[in-house]
Image 1 (cartoon, rainbow, N blue to C red):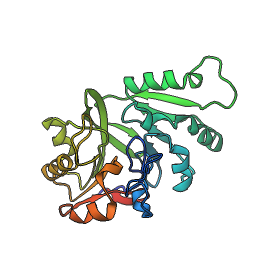
Image 2: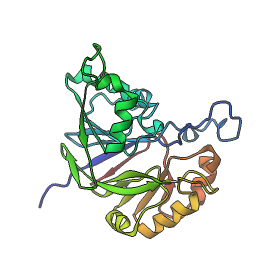
Image 3: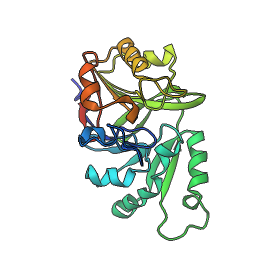
Image 4: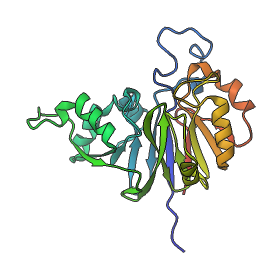
Amino acid sequence: MPVQKKHTITFLGTGTSQGVPLIGCTCNVCTSIDSKDKRLRSSIHIQTANTSIVIDTGPDFRQQMLRANINTLDAVVFTHGHKDHTAGFDDIRAFNYIQQKDMEVFCDERVEEVLRKDFDYVFSDYKYPGVPQANLHRISPAPFSIGDIDLTPIDLLHYKLPVYGFRVGDFTYITDANAISAAEIDKVKGSKILVLNALRKEPHISHFTLDEAIALAQEIGAEQTFFTHISHQLGLYNEIDPILPKGISLAYDGLQVTSE
């Protein structure tokens, strides 16, 4: 029988675009001393025996790499081009220096446009010494591989913006979405571990609410679902997590799971 690959997934950040706590907010979540209520911007690290990748480089990317002690990185994959998922891109240059090679970057056309605009110096014909070095790879709905990590893109909508989730073996990661078609749900079914965004209880124009995320999780039927991209408006971890249905939990920064 073929040897199953083990993927170790680390939640580098599980917060919404402003993070938790929010600057200047004195609500009970933002002033909580529970580490599970302190959330950097959403991102994950996927590690196998041979390959290390990160999905999204938000504003906290540097802090996340240091906190998680990630010293090697083969590639960055982007879900979409919003600032809370791209703003830390410049800090790939530390890996350029350590590894003495360009960073492999996987994104769709929309994200590439954002990167070329916001980090124009990276892609200039005449580069200033020390700027990040990146090889861009255009992705589509077709599956692709990075080393021994095989990724299947999941088409989603973030209000009207097309974004990607990704399935990696028995694990599926969906953040910043509020719509998924039946055909894409079929791609996700069979996942043992599912990650969904669950921003807050109240309706939102571009994110699943808690109830919407619960309903989708139950439709997909993964053995374990974790919610991410969480706002302070959702409530305290120790009050919300215990009342979630069986098999559904709130993710938190630093959480690690393994899948095949």
